[in-house]
Image (cartoon, rainbow, N blue to C red; front, side, top):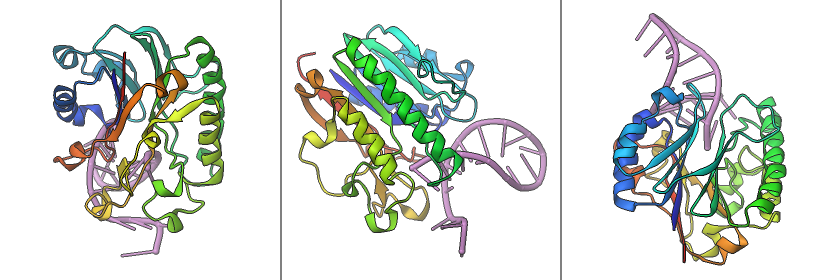
Length: 256
DNA sequence: ATGGCTTGAGTGTCAAGA
C-alpha cells in the first residue's frame, strides 16, 4: 500500500500537477492540504475519471483538506471531535483497514503570537483525539503539513531558525508528544540524503538553493511502521511551472 | 530593510503562508 501527503497550495491551480502525479505514482491514498475551496469548487469529476474517490473538508480561501483513494473510504470524520474550530484542517477515513488521518497543522505565524497559542492548543487537541483513535484503529497513519521541523537536520540554516516559528521548543515538544503516542516518523526509518526538505520558500530562489525545511510528515503506528518499506520526498513536482511550495511525501507499507 | 513570491478575493491592494 502506497500512501502520500501533499500541501498543494490551492487545488484549483494545482489540479494538473495532481492529476499527472497520480497517474505516474499511482498511490493508494493521497492526503491533500490547502485545497482553498469549498466543496462546490472541488474537482470531484476529474479525480473520479483518474480512478480516485475523494472526501473533502473544504473552506473558502484558506485551509481545506481532502483524501483521495482508489478504494472505498469508511467512517469519515471531519475536524477534531470536541474541539471548537472554524478552520478546516482535519479529515480522516478508513481505507483497506488503515486509519488515514490527513491534517493541516496551523502555521503559528510568530512565537508568542495569538496564532502561536492557537497552534499549540490545536496540537494538544489533536494529540488527545489521536490517543483515542489509536485505541480504536491499531493500523493508523497521520499524514500532513505539520508546520514543524522536528530537528535541526530538518532545517537548512538551524542557527538562523533557532527558536523561530516552525522550530521552537514548544512546537518540537508537541511533535515528540505525537511520537510518544507510539507513532514513528516514516522518513527517519531510512537512510536519507542530508538536507532533505519538503518545503522551499517561493522567494529568493529557495528551491534552487535548497533553502528548505522538512515540515511535511508521515507518522505510522507500530503495526504499520514495522512493515514500512520506503519513505521519500518527491521533488519532481516542485520543479514544474507554477509549483506548490511543498513537495509530496510518499511511503510504502508492505503486505497491504 | 521583517522585504523577497504565490494565492484568493476582487478590481486596489491586502492577508496569509512558512
